[in-house]
Length: 369
Image (cartoon, rainbow, N blue to C red; front, side):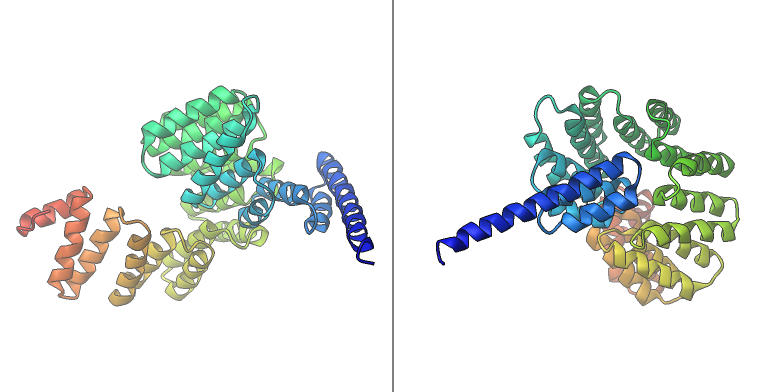
């Protein structure tokens, strides 16, 4: 009996492996036909025994913009260059920057010299990481490397546009996004980025037109629906905005940006309790990001609940210690509460970070920084 046990276990493992591979093959076939729901079902059935199924499921969920779940499956897949590159891209979408950088560096290390698309994707994520850090020189260096690896891909152009936008070159950013769309007219990121640029330029009509064109191709795109909601907010069409944002949340209930924009709508209506509810949902799904805390703090300021506001702002600067604007808000609130020592300390922090208003306050009040 003891000799047969390992043989039986091996036979069972081989049987399970064959069954899992059959499900993966069915999933790939369904995916090739555009039957994503069916493909997802096949991949899910095989995840217990197949790393390939976990990888393919993660990649499918990434494409469907379910980034939180995609990250979970990609993390559980394997340590191949492909898995690491996709995990890096997903982490960057979630703005989990240290994890994104780590996965991207691993992907570059593991990828074969001839695997241009994988290397380009990982290098693009490194460019996004340095962009988020404000190191635009390194960001542009990595995006050039990504372009050299896979010149026909829209991803490097999309990332170059993001970097240019962060540097304040909005016209050049728009040009880059248009080039990404030219490289792939169906690219969801290019439609999103171009729509967002029109929002930033306060041209919501063009944004709506661009985003609707993208949604004709990608009907379930959370990004596009979110940005469409933002465009409708700029047009003061709040009901249309709410509808679009709720549709985005209906597809991905973890999409923090949509909750924040819903909160902004209710904040604008002075419906503060409803705004707080939405901001708290955003924080729940993205506790590592500062925006929800800052918006929640702003709401408490409007309600004249300054201690609660300070608490939220302090959570924001605990995450981003370079957030000079939030240090200024904390300082201002301590000033209202007649706490001069804490007011001075926070203005000094902001001044050291280069905040002009804080530096002016420190100079006026004889505070060195």
